[in-house]
Length: 168
Image (cartoon, rainbow, N blue to C red):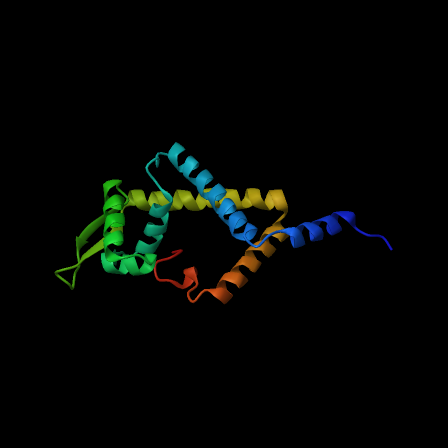
């Protein structure tokens, strides 16, 4: 019987990993992608963009949101959402206007600069995705993504892609 020593070493390596290594590897992969994204954004005129800005602009969505709704979508307090909204306004990614039906509320919407940053981010993420596919192979990357989606859908009460405003 012929034993594939590379596969045996891989199987051995997987069983020797400690439980805390998975979240650390996921975090390291996330940081790698996000750090590279922001380095490229800075070179393209978006040097003030921070990771929270992209998440917040996704949560604002194409139609805009009230500050309360932004807080719900981001899973933060209304005060934290207001601070995030102020930052988006200060760097030119969003603007506020009176709510058409509620005189007490305001609607936060993306500006053309905010839309530009999101579009550029999508292009950069696609490029990074292709690079990962080149590094580990498209089938392995697809399997990784499928497995991560299966795990997160089974353990999370809300899938991020199902939240209003996200990924649109």
